[in-house]
Length: 69
Image 1 (cartoon, rainbow, N blue to C red):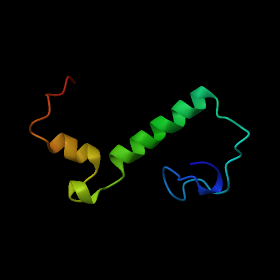
Image 2 (tube, rainbow, N blue to C red):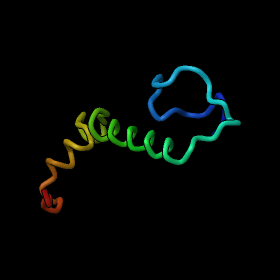
Image 3 (cartoon, rainbow, N blue to C red):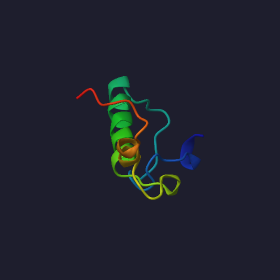
Image 4 (cartoon, rainbow, N blue to C red):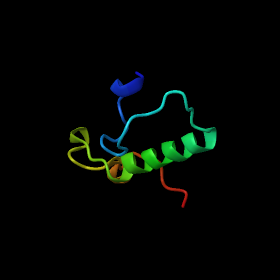
């Protein structure tokens, strides 16, 4: 999906429209993607996870492999 109808990863996170003629440099794309992944896993809650955040659900899962840290 492109242009004004494109979905945003976090609604309301960035005001204004995206200039389609300007592509993001790869490093900037990666930075934004990692920022979104962090937000999704640590701040976003889901009904599918009974209101928990993905990281909370993952840590509470007794079937996950033990942490290496």
